[in-house]
Amino acid sequence: MAIQIRNRNLDAAVVSAVGGIVIFYVGLVGLRLVFLGSDTAPADLAEVFAGTLWGILILIFSALLFLDYRRSKIYGAAIIILSFASWYGTSGGLFFGFVITLLGGIMGFVWKEKPPTPHRPLQS
Image (cartoon, rainbow, N blue to C red):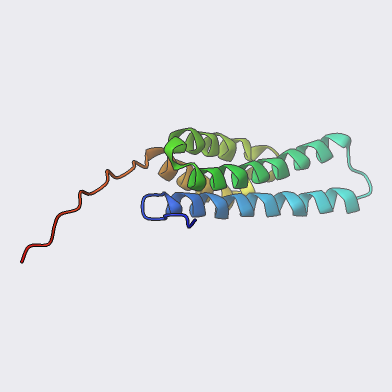
């Protein structure tokens, strides 16, 4: 059984996922710096871990945005909220990930399913 892409919001899911990857990567770099640093507070670890978690959640909601396209408003709103939450821990994926994720979340939120086109018989 193949997935029909014609009536799904692939562009919103891809844009959100790219932003989520950026936020996740910045979080991983931050985790590495915290673990390699000698004098870091536990609050630094919690902050960077939260930033990495935001990236993971954005990737999950991006996949759900594509797979469960009938609830695109819910997943789009969740991606928008998570993009703002990514400021805590990863500085919004160094602002670049925040902008991309926010754009993808908005695209997912405003996406509307196209009504099916009726089949017309061929005229000869």
